[in-house]
Length: 466
Image (cartoon, rainbow, N blue to C red):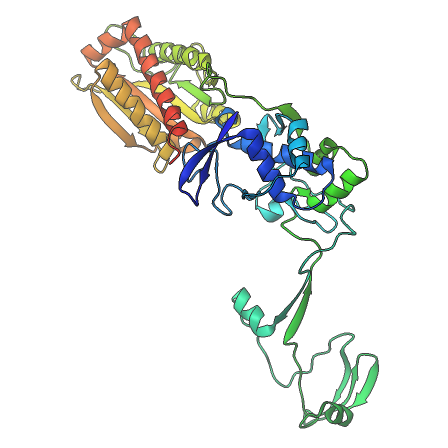
């Protein structure tokens, strides 16, 4: 299996064999001596991150370089790192021994955060990212207690703290700070001069302090101007603790035991490989046939044709076409039943699809109104792109009047959390449009046109790594 990597230094997309890419990522992040089971754990983590970005698992690839799975831009795709390194044989062996293995949570690849050393416990995701992720729960980690951290002690002057933190610290005069263990039991006369003060374990007269420190007088104040900040642990604390994981491996734990310890509730599966006969494998779509049920307010044609029936037939045919190409489909209705808009949105949001497509028909008192129009929610670039492809297919292959792609504030567009498109196929109130809708072959052709547009959308993503 090949992965597309965008080389930001050379400004070119590169095709790289998946196992070679995983080995390079693993080797970059495990420089030095590491236990074989830790290397295997990293190989699974790297493969899981790549799987998470692929179309098979509903990933979008690199957001900055469409069509590529990842890029080498620092801090963008590969927080894991991807540099030209000499990969040790042990890493290649770890990749081979975990061949195709990835971690899933609720059917989807996780984002396997990791850090160097947690210092005793990992973090809950909400404390770092601001949102709760079930597989990123705090776990106690005593395995890394004997590891050392670089730059664990940092010194800052008061001025440096103010500049780095963009704050200001008040420095009042004439106030004597009682700092436990340092400056205590301070006696001051009515002129503000220190008569007696305990510094550390010893009590001094004010005059003694003046003489020993060569101060100008006994009327002195003090304020900390340099601070020692001591740290335990290195990194954000999310997910796998690299030092702890290596110690777990040294004590005989397997890579799966290590990963299950740091990522709560994950399971291991074999990564699905793209199938040329199923180019839409991994694509998840919710199809919505507008209206439905005995009491619905759907539009009706002069011949008695019902919008709800036309919509459902187009959606069912489209479902078959997409499933045949490997896509995962969900329907808001598959028969003549009513369903509230809120329930349609809730169903879609529960499935977390790539797209929500609703098919409906228009009506207007003036029967001359005719043609196709498609709506998307403002700011939804993916919805807009798909909408334009669909209307081009419908107008180009079926000769329908193109009334344009437009933004709208419809309930479903607002409430559905995925990219959403509402297709208003034709005006059932127009005699010519109604005649087309009554034709079964036209309804099948309409489904096929929408299907071709969806395929074209994903072909563009795969071929636009520039």
